[in-house]
Length: 361
Ligand code: PMP
Image (cartoon, rainbow, N blue to C red; front, side, top):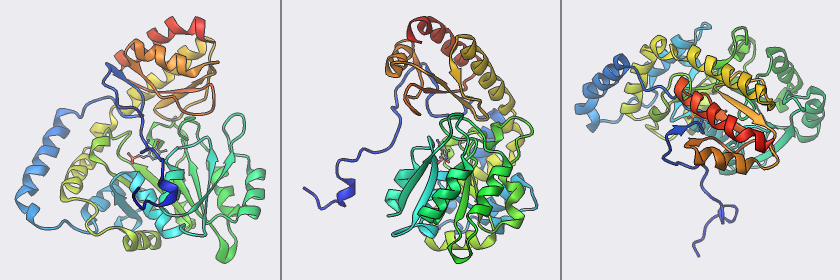
């Protein structure tokens, strides 16, 4: 027996099954390969830096952060942006800086299953508040929980994973008010990993940044940008938040290759975002057709759909897999989650569902 931390004994590494099947709709990736113009830009960027790989990269990734600020707009500049290897690492930096031993992180469940792991890895306590039946946030229950738990960090995921549902800006503004308590105020992190897929008119919490130094908005290039393999997540916040992230990060955490290829991709944001409308259309088609099959579907502002409810969701998941379609067994009991695919992948999923559903509901 190794002298492992007791809370890690018997724990499994996080991750969805990585199965090699024709239609993979299980981890909310963007299914479209990078267009040739971006492939060329990324290749050129890599060639341009290869000879310099004997040197450490820019520790502060300033050029990349400047580009990300330009992409977000809202009057932001590089002082407001922090970047790391996926928004997973951004969130870990935030918990290292604002949570930790004796401090509490509060989230609204069902939500992204990695949060308890970030809390465990940073020795933070993790408390959850159930969402309402329609997956919205119960502000009265939240106010009571804040009084009782005194959280140091509150995470709001919008659009939420795995439900796909968005939280209106007024609710986030109210969460900021409720958590205002002088020295004991909490940081409010809004995880907007899927924000680009939201239906038009769904405002981003970036609109609230100017007046709220306790607000942090996290984003990722893994979804709308179609750059999951590039591993680049980022946040927008007051410069003081960025400064404390710089204290806890490992030196040279973002490789020169990551910085260069991500910069090249951000320079082509318009081309990459060209697929977002198509993915929204596939999501809407999935929602409508699943409802047409008599199923319950959560209203989605993301690139995936939560649907159900099944007596035996595992059987439905397995029946789909048998037909070459991999989705995710996640969320409250009876529900399943499917990512929007290319039109052909979406066809394959819906065809398989129409064969399975009469027996499953
Ligand atoms: N936040 C949410 C809500 C997510 O669903 C995901 C990815 N599944 C992430 C963060 C992490 O994304 P990445 O580390 O690839 O940026």
